[in-house]
Length: 579
Figure 1 (cartoon, rainbow, N blue to C red):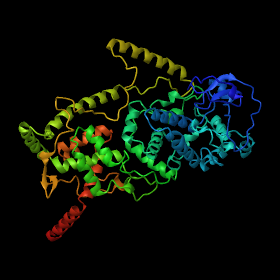
Figure 2 (spheres, helix red, strand yellow; figure 1 turned 135 degrees about the vertical axis):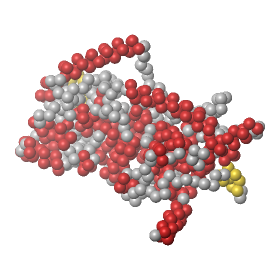
Figure 3 (cartoon, rainbow, N blue to C red; figure 1 turned 180 degrees about the vertical axis):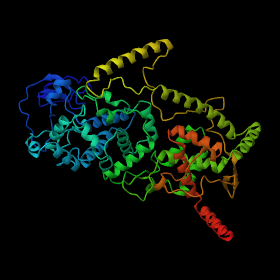
Figure 4 (cartoon, rainbow, N blue to C red; figure 1 turned 90 degrees about the vertical axis):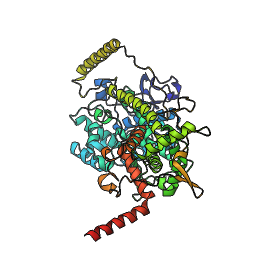
């Protein structure tokens, strides 16, 4: 039996073996098939029982390139497995893999009718009927389930795919002239993407973010995407980790080969579409003690932006005033179109921007006057912490931001999109691709020696903070402990802003459903101080400044709703009198 084989897997070092129909041992953890064989006494299995064998690949295919039969959903399954393992290495709770992501993935396969269902999707039946007769479909012997679901739960997974469907797809693939390493590569690209929410590489990140949100892990979407770009979470060229038997070529490259960075909006929107598609219930509540609550995130981003700690009192007041810290506002309810989709990280930095406008105005004039006043007070100040100087903060942060931005731009410019593993779209071009790849590697090594550049062997450990500031520095570059006395005044026992004015980013919001934005952002139309603050948080979150500007406008309209209504009504009366 497979229990007698106790060697560790060469691919993943696990001891978790099963037997293929051909009598070879395969690893249930990573699907690696060894050359070690054993005579199989009984290959029959009982319907609806736990599957312990996988089908051997097409004999024709094995003779050609040594690869075995595999499906696109199995490829995405391996990608998800690698990504969730990387998240576990970063400290995410182990339950997210087996109890959350596993069930999400199983539900997706069943809803999209790729597995764990009695009948294939309607358009698949139509495609199969054109290519072959129904007698051929029904005459194929039964085969086990396509998937050992992420190899996560050995005690579950009784649902199986439609047996005739699996063999039918194989026949369609063999009859098509389009080259593909997978069985259903060409058929997969023919599917209607909108109707079935077809799986893509960005959607693997949507799955991960959805699972992170469900377990309320302290990782925002912007952090998740940054870890991807920094290489801590497999995404770009992740197919290099596929088992050797899973040959990837032709149309498979259009599905798994990524040559662009993941986009925040795309991953965010697809996560919400997925949650609705899977009919998920209301997510666990986002309470005040959760990391994703605005009060918590504001504290984090105030520290990273090197702003005074006292600003946190003001961000909390704004959050409470407009009700964006309420559980019902923050908690995701899939499919509920009446609630706004919350970008937790973008919302938090937008609150900080609004507070800075309340206290410093950010009109390229008032903040500099306050800075001069604070500078004079600091010269004679001998008690307590120093007064916060906006000008000095601007200079310190801008210098650090410019250095980080330049480094990021250089890294992106030098990034090699081509993976180490050569890829080819057809068998005819295989030898040319291998030869060209070897030539590129040789040239890179030669230029590397001439330029004296040495590649880092290991990636630096990931950090939640991109900009760090220490109060131990004697150069005064850390502003966390600085006081806001220079911009506040006591009124009726409460500290209020000395600044009585406030300018709105926009008087009237756009229809978000029509144009995708609540407001339109053009740098030339706004003060440079405001643009700098947006740019700072845009860098920290790796999103466009317009996304943050949208949230700022939304918060302003909630905060000044009554005054805006009176102003709009007053302007309407004036226009009518003029007419």
